[in-house]
Amino acid sequence: MSTSPQSDPRVDQAAVTDESLLAVHEKLLGKQPDEKAHYRLMPLSLLFIFSGLIFFGGTYLGRFSGHFSPQVYNEYAQPPKSGVAAAPVDPLAQGKAIYANVCAACHQVTGLGMAPVFPPLAGSEWVTGSEERLIRIVLHGLQGPIKVKGVDYMGAMPAAGPGSGFNLNADKVAAVLTYVRKEFGNGAAPISAQKVAEIAAKEGSRGPWTAADLEKLP
Image 1 (tube, one colour):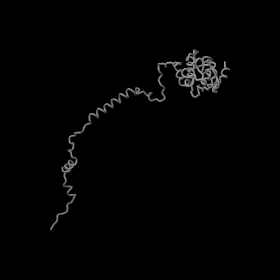
Image 2 (cartoon, one colour):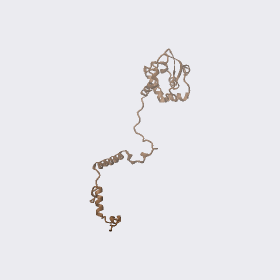
Image 3 (tube, helix red, strand yellow):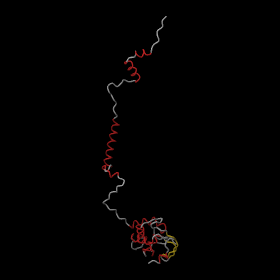
Image 4 (cartoon, helix red, strand yellow):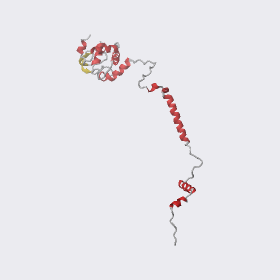
């Protein structure tokens, strides 16, 4: 009894046609192939978003690019000079602010001081008298006893000039001294920054003054 020969896979594969392969692929994909170039377009919302971003970027560059001048990106370029001069600083207003920050804690906002340690500035002969003595007190400080308006005070005033803890420059020293010579009922003349700078250069770096040393000065 004859038996049928075993099937040869090469013979079975040769019997497969192109149409059958396409049918199997379509079945696996679950959809028909795109034979008419029906491509999906970008959603209109994304198109509007990208268009808006492009418009914003162009507007931003046009406004803040400095007209694409190379000087905009020059880190060594000097700032342009303004045609409007800065308003001058009122020395009394500046002096009042400095007094509030530096002096008021001891001499009080009223300028009446705190006996028997901190002497008053109101009506003080040291304030309305020699401007050179007053400048030296603020620049270098004062230590030891001092008589003000007939009353003895014993305290220590720290230096407030350049290099001190307060580090007030000549302009600021002049401003605060002008303020105390005008305020608290005092009516003395203002003090210039040039005069402060002159005395600071003359005395240089030194320790605090005493009232006895100051009274020896003209």
